[in-house]
Image 1 (tube, protein in one colour):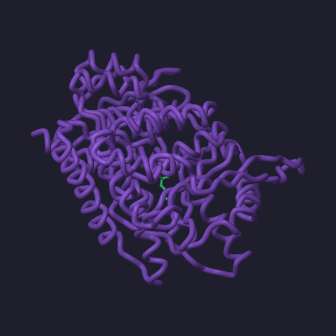
Image 2 (cartoon, rainbow, N blue to C red):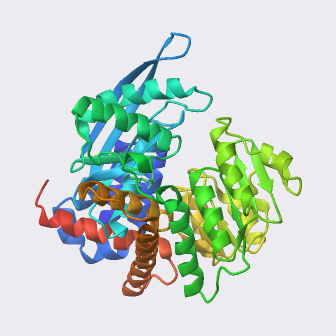
Length: 447
Ligand code: GLU
């Protein structure tokens, strides 16, 4: 049995109740076979793959808080410190009822290779809670965040572990956590990123993930002889990533024609452009987690209740919502509709079966680890800003972001060429991200 197959079998046995984690481990390990096969003896002896698939540390804690009726509520908090070979653990916090250890481990594992691809010195980690911010008052959110950080503070720090936002955690939540952290530690340091600019946050951090995705998509299209100019783009979600993506698409001459939420999707043939993009922020801050009101506000748009946007014909597809939103049936519809390019903005939005189907049918897939790395890259720039006690301008930030995204695409293509992977940008990104972490681990001995 090959070393990769051996480790996949072991990981499956050890983590049988964590399907999302198993999904990403299988996807990554299968795609780095050419590199592992070339180093099989050494990697096996040093148990490199066993080590890289086992988090360095996992923290699970109780988060008690008092709701507006005076009732005590209890949630579970998590932080998985997955890999610190190339820098302090770095990754967001997700507050969503679906959160359990398997989701945090999948996100933490992906984060290792994503962070490595940025070329910046950040390791991989992720955290969160099964707390649902939707429908909660600001004061309830504040009390939850304060309780969460009152435990987590002892495990994090600017040189140890630097959390940020993810689904359900934006500037408001990070602000509450930062305030409580500062109060407990008496330190105004860069322990959390994604802060508001008046709290030491980075100008442009809110746009960074979506902008980065579109820079990546531009490079991808360019490589295959196309451009963004005039392209119709189906996107999903209506949160921070969808917002930044729609904005940058418009700036670069393309247009998003859909958004989606848990309630259904919106088709806006005129384009989600101009003031309609900023309306997404209003929709989000309503706390209702629905996109239907977009169609009332802009009469040209149509709402399709309970449906996803993947049946709409487009030149490019950018899923911006959550994991596994594109499964085999959606993939079949998209291919039948002539889909040529998919660029993943959400983390692991496509199932492995759907990815295989896309590959068999010649669809080019830009993987999330590469395409959405602009968010965490800008978080690392925020860490530098805080460490230097300075402020970077938005112009500086976007210039750096663009260069990082171009470089991520180049590294992926270079790995494709070196290992004869053809157009497999997923394998290219995984190998490029993995190689850097693996080499750092090998130099640090058995730790
Ligand atoms: N949650 C984002 C991600 O999935 C950003 C993490 C960060 O800024 O640390 O990469």
